[in-house]
Length: 418
Image (tube, rainbow, N blue to C red; front, side, top):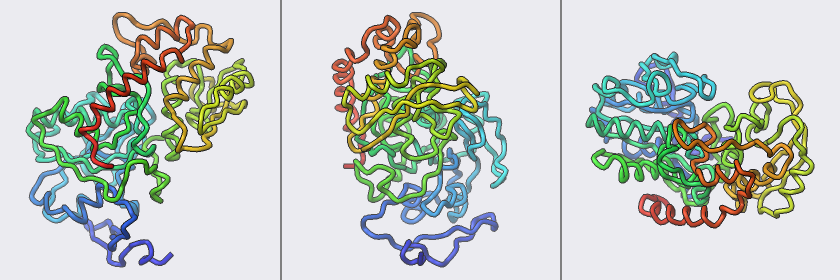
């Protein structure tokens, strides 16, 4: 394809270190969408002149030509990129889910790294002492249990205390920014996989999330937003024509964001395999002895839009039931425009509750002490109690809908895009 047709100019940009050549962009058509990093580099780079900058990022921090945000920021004239900050999975994505990130120096750029998923989840004063601004550039999946927005929240709190500014290089919600649903989280069950009072699926971009956190937790923080250019609500990642870079090992496709919202919480039970250890993470649910035929019939009988359920057998190569044949279902998205992952999650809970495996599948909720990982991900003791007692989780639909409605009214003031 000709460079001009892709908006790519022939002139390379020499990085500050003198070793990385960055492809640059010519003017774009009206229908094209820019990520926040391109807005910074192409239109607002002068704002960073003379600043000492930190960068919280991972492999998804790239422009549309897959130039790393690390290299792009280093190449800005008059900008000193002092330190990188590593979230879960690390700067280059080499760490497994939940694995301690022990990086101290990035092997590619040579920059020092402050790990935010090692001995601390929060930046220490020493990590921030020589910085004027911390930039954030990570592609998210739009679910509160995915820990990157928790790292952003903790970074904002630490920077407010240290008098350091935060700048968010925005990226789209891959599900389109309109889907909002799932249980709210009670304060007692808040944690790093549920850091703020939002539904599981909150329908916000990282910059919109940051505006919410600034208003509700860090009012004295100076926040800079580098918004998406050309993105509109309702545009899924698949509408953009951008390459997808996996934010973690088990989000191989942008559509996996939908499946994560359906099954990720169920995976925290430890009594099911949700496709982890197979080529279809979060798209499967199974366990030895689960009646997949009956489960698929029950779920398809609900007539949920945009989704079908197919009985199947699979053998995970790691994670739950490693090497064991699991019977269960595959979830097939037939229309991302009409599928509601939160409604599908609730239906899956009901379908599993009705199966022979359902007896004892859901534990009694923790009334005191540290909540379980399932409880932290679910966030809702009332629903947890119903599941543990063998009741019908679909009975909670009206209550959950009311709570989501309250959040939608609260959320409105923080939205950037129509």
